[in-house]
Amino acid sequence: MPVIRFVREGLDVECYPGENLREVALRAGVELYGLKGKLGNCGGCGQCITCFVGVADDGADQTGPPALSARTAVEDRKLQGRPQNWRLACQALVERSLVVLTRPQLGGGQGDALLAAASLTPLPAGPIAWPAPPETPQAKEEESATADEAEPDGPSAGDTVR
Image 1 (cartoon, helix red, strand yellow):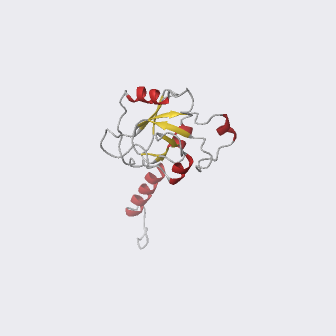
Image 2: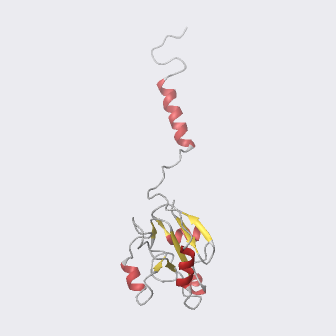
Image 3: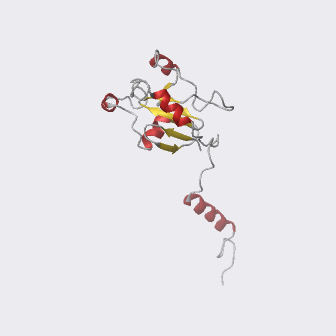
């Protein structure tokens, strides 16, 4: 599975390919928002730009798919005039392992240095497809019921009982 390294939090989090970056971060307890974002975020619709993050160079030196989905038109409009490595977490889908800096505007321009330092430790590539879903107890019961119907234990219609 892809691994997201949240630099500021010192946390590596696994996720499925294609998962929304914002949802993964919130599920892992990562603090995406400053005070303004906590008071009034849009809930992941791309309208408030409070969930922006910095990402390490998106695999320009590696082969294979990029770590995140392509930048959306919403991101192009909302992040105009901001660094190219900033993304809206609510608009980005994780495709493979990457390094993320939450609240990149903090730290007086040290964000790129933090991302570069964190990128020195390799991340696992992870699969690029969803794993097979686990078998549920309900599916096992349905299989058992189907097998019971195929081989009845007692008399069936047309049998003579004495």
